Length: 174
Image 1 (cartoon, rainbow, N blue to C red):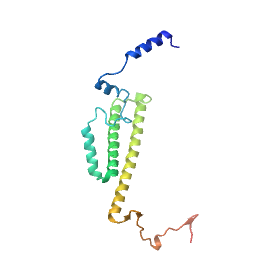
Image 2: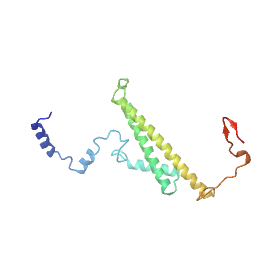
Image 3: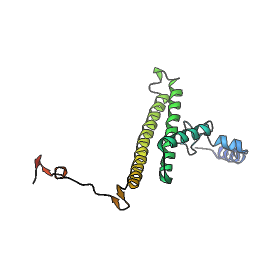
Image 4: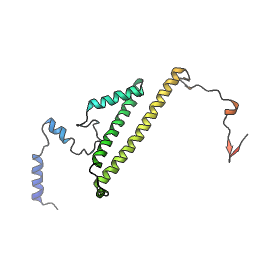
């Protein structure tokens, strides 16, 4: 249990510590708990180059050819996931450069596992975002070609042989 004297000393010391005063000091202290940046509140970290991020975004915009606000937003999110994957790869390379067999059950081993989990999460997110973008682009293309009206897709002709046949226990029903 803490003594009254020690508690009083702690309270006095707390009054003296008010944190960093300058903007530079505040910016530096805001990153005190940052370990790898994969779950960072601010997207670009202090040592990352905004021009490189913009170049990646421009390249993906050109490759994915978004039209409209929704598709633009999806491409922006795809860019962020790509950037996060690059960040993860860089962190993994740095970690593996000092990893030894003795590290198998250490904090480094857990860090490698965590990086793998982030990578898997990013890959799933990327796959989902790309599928959404393709779906919106297909919808836009269908609307432009007249295959779809505002009410929904136009019915396609179905021949006698293309009709769905119901089965029960593997046998065709009439």
